[in-house]
Length: 212
Image 1 (cartoon, rainbow, N blue to C red):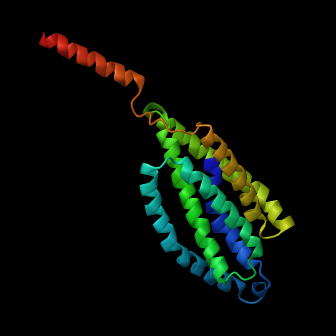
Image 2: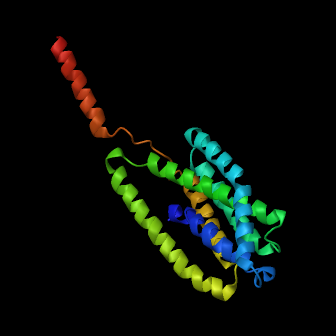
């Protein structure tokens, strides 16, 4: 569920951010499509460098820090960023560009942290099947999100998709914090299973017997 929530950035940034930009009154008449496309392109351009910096940083941190300590603040950060969209009055303001960058950075941290936690806690012999299952739930989560957010967008306004993600991220932040405090998210690094260990021990005994 958390992974599906983290991957909602694809739809939040790709679709609903464009609709949010287009909702401002100054773009409702005239060449609105061209103006919206220009603003969206500038927003994406501004966000490229911070996003790539987050990719590199997370790649280093996930190897030396437990992923739960990265996931929890990332959920909290994205929750605050999404909620702050309700206070933006101009999509070309510095605040709007900063929020877009923080939205991508926090989502990048979430995706990398969750996938790192996911892979570290899976035995090798089931990783393929579980990866397929993860992809299924990602698609299911996207379907449910779009099915719910569409009517909400029409009924509650253009910032409603961001508010919904903010509430869900806050709930998952608290949930991850509880699991982390109780030790239920400790990665076990199950790369070597019990069968492999036993097999190696038996091989060692055979080698010793042969030497004797």
